[in-house]
Image 1 (cartoon, rainbow over the protein chains, first blue to last red):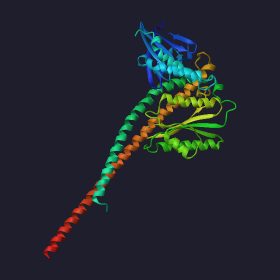
Image 2 (cartoon, each protein chain N blue to C red; image 1 turned 45 degrees about the vertical axis):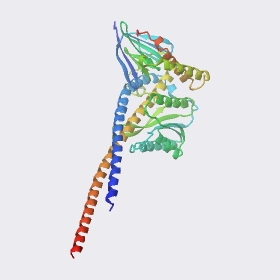
Image 3 (cartoon, each protein chain N blue to C red; image 1 turned 60 degrees about the vertical axis):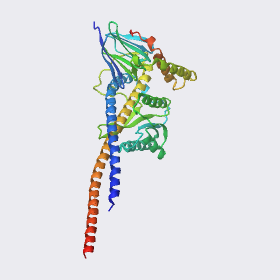
Image 4 (cartoon, rainbow over the protein chains, first blue to last red; image 1 turned 90 degrees about the horizontal axis):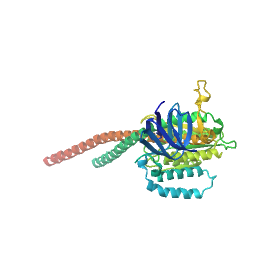
Length: 140
Length: 290
């Protein structure tokens, strides 16, 4: 059995990761999911959160994604994200007031507002930023 | 003939203009390099996104159509620059936009404009076109994900609610620093992938789709529009700096030519003055002797 598979993390500003991984864990609309080698062809959307790449024993790589799409095709996984950042670059303290702001905006919004889905996304992203340290599982 | 002093002043002024245009050219060249790099970096994203959206949207043609009661409006997003001094760049884009507007009007469509960049916005307001939105003063960078996202969200909202039946973007597509071609790209309704019609269509990949195709199609559609607009912004940004660099280079060359011409004129004027003074001295000496 193949131990690793190819994974690419692609954003409009460049390819952030392209290489062999053992496992990828990300957050989809139905919750967290993992992809191992020989996964079937698969498309899903990605919710704002952390994607974890297992490169080897106790060797992890992580990125914070602002949502996007994941595709597995012929054993190659691609995540397309509009924005991605390394957790080390995330300022979780600066994100705290953003969470409050997003929560307040959402509280005054109708569910039928066209911007509602965006507001939910913004809140999820802000929360992921603020809690980045709890969401990470790699030793740091 | 202009006096020596006037010519000297003129040369000094052309020289300082030349310094400015040369500096602007260097700045434009540096920004062009950055913009080209960004354009190159974005390519894998577009290619990968196109592949995914083609395979997914091909399976859901109904979702691509505008709502039944859609109006008869075409929304045009026109990308120009905020600042001038970039040759015919803005003029060309605006001309293309006006042609597209005329075509649409002839086809019985109402045109609404969304202006990105001050030059286009000012122009369309001057000719009293129907400008429904604008994003001006996009400094320091035009091509940002946030801007693309914003415009795409607006476009999709109008499209889904049936306010607009068609939406497209007009921008200058970057070919080289010397050549930028105005381009009209229709984004909505999404054109069905060519594979579904062609004979040589590749067999569609059988995907497991989560949560469901119906829920995923809007997400992909939105991503598709965002990616296309981001791409247009990147192209426009590179084109703007390419055009600016070329314009400033020819301005600098013009200044060099002008300085050479004025220097010649100045020398001639100086020589004439010396000759005149000599003549006066000789004349004076002659008068004394006589």
